Structure formats: C-alpha cells, structure tokens
Length: 352
Ligand SMILES: [Zn+2]
Image (spheres, rainbow, N blue to C red):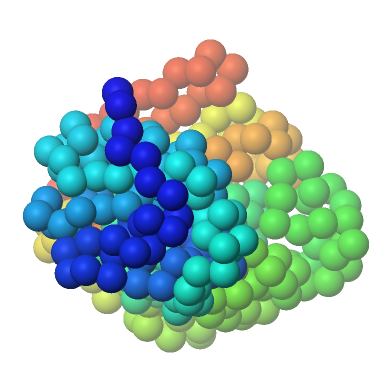
C-alpha cells in the first residue's frame, strides 16, 4: 500500500488545526520517555486487538512510532478498519525529539503497563482486571500447589491473597515448591512466599498467616475471603475446609496430587444444591491416603495443578469461561491424559 508520508515538521504544523491529531502507536513503556504534545496514545498491540473505541473516523491521524516502521503497520490496520484520513510520519519520534518539537510526559497508570496484555485481551480488558483487583483469595498451604497457584494469582493482579501454612522451607521441598528458594531454607514458608509474591507484584496485598488450619482459626480465615483454594496435604484439613466453605457459602477450588497424577474440581457453595467433597470422597474413619512425603511426586505435577487452580479462580472472579464444577478433572502426566468425570450431590452425604 502507498503511504501519505509527512515529515515531523509537517505533522506538527497540520496538528495545529482541529480534527488533526498525532496518533502514537509505540508501546506503553516508551510513552514514559515522552510523547508529542497532544498525541492520542494507542499501542500497535491494542490496534491489533482492534481496541479503537477512542478513535474517530472523521479525524485526520498522523501516525507516529519510534523509527517509522510500526506506524506503517498501524496505518494498514486502521485502513482495513475503515479509517482513511491517515498520514505516515516516516521519520518517527526520534526525529520529533531531534527537531525539538513540543513533548509532554503523559501520566500513565503503572497498572496499564503491568496488565497491558490483559487490557488488550479480547473478552478480558480493564473490566476483568478491576474485578481481580477487588478479589480476596485464601490460599491454604504454601507447598507445591500453593507455589504455582499463588505466584500466578499475584502475577495476574488478585488484589488480596491470604496464605496460610505453619511449615518451614526444607531442601526436599524445592524440587516442586517453586515459590521458595535455596536461600529461604529454614524460614517460614508463608514469609518466604510473601517475600516472593511482593517482589513479583508490589501492587497487591499479601497476608501471611503462619498457623496450621484448625477448628479454632478456620472460620475466621474463610468467612472473610471470596474464594478458598485448597493446597493442603492431608485429608482431615480438606474435610474441615470443605465443611466451613459449605457453612459460609464460599467457593472452594480443590486439587490433590499423587505421583504423576492430579485431580481438580470446584465446589460452588453459593449454589444451595452444590455437591461437596464428602459427596465425592466420603470420609472413612482413620483413613488417610498416602501423600508426597511417603510416595513421591514429580515436581511439575503440583505446579500444573496449582496453575489450573489459579485459572479456575480467575474465571470465577472475572466471569469468563466455564468453571469446572460438578466435574472432576483428572490429569495423568505420564500419558498426557486430561479427563473430566461428572459427579453429583450424594443423598447419603453427611456434610449437607
Ligand atoms: Zn456432600
């Protein structure tokens, strides 16, 4: 395609008139160093995602990037979207600076940069991001599941994460518990986790609770949060968490791992007739299945399951996609099999 090439001086002169504007298509982080005064800011990535609601087809746009290449791509996209008053500043912003044309420093919210890939994601955007910011997730356990789950909850911007665990970091944890590091051996897992989460995303609030979940503290922890993620390593804690989530009509994201396999499901106790953990696995007196301490687990298994727990949490908070409720996902990483098994509320369940 042919471009209406203009110099930076010509663009500057043209934009003194109304309905003539510079359109800067560089990336958000480049705008921090300054933009042409009065520019409209819309990155090439956002244009590619067709996030063009702030543009007007009756306005003439003088498209600028750093050296004049991305601006060509932007013009092609805008042209396809029905814009035809387009000019190409072929020298780019580097020349604008060299010619000492007026520059301003836009006030950019750091969230716009941190979450820019969410902002441009179709079906997600700022609306979903704001919901994540408002959410409070309780992560039970800072072990294998909690490691990958909490890291992603923090990375995607869940506003408040409470993480509960009373263990200390040991060398044998590090093969799978990637939130911790060799230098944190001997420290409390929740403190090690909090440090790492805040380092990853200082914009969120992380609350570290170095306690074991018991009948004494469980009500207080669960009733104040929106979603509970079970990353515990024993069945008695899992039943206790299930019962209290049911009592307070909370959402519970369950996962368990065994050697090369993982299980995952969501209990939505906001729904009055929702099945619970006891419907799936009725409690048997004195029965405690083997855990990773006894039978081992491949390092990536809780990593994957924790990421999937975080994914279910994101879907529940933002309302996107389909949630894994009334279905148990079983994952066998040796055969790469992912299977969903439906289940229902049990009439014999003692939990309801
Ligand atoms: Zn039940």
